[in-house]
Length: 146
Image (cartoon, rainbow, N blue to C red; front, side, top):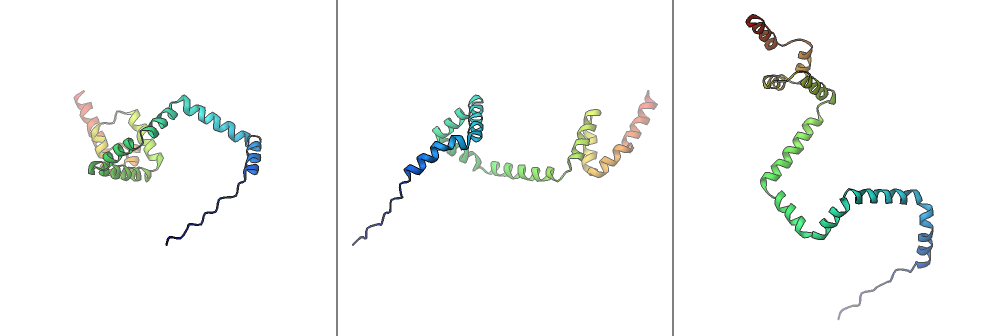
């Protein structure tokens, strides 16, 4: 025969909980004000409406996302994105900054990009200090023609 399941109701701490709730606004006033400001900001930006819509649609949104991510192309693109993130994380910010600054100063032509990527970052940065052979030959041709 089946045995009854023992059920022990949790102790009712209504009095102590009520007292804690009464004291909570005074004890945590700064945190509550900050939470209200955050809630208002989320409401102003429409984030709460977005979350309400996501929660309301529930399984439909999750099904759509799952179907999109389950394709082999999506998996490859996520892997490629992670690999690119790791690649760029290994480059010192100073190198990328100097590359951006030099690209902004002079219109960087595609041959220069190919040269930078074929030589490597360190050699490309050293070449900024001395003109490369291609630049010298172009200057010679331009001065001879003009």
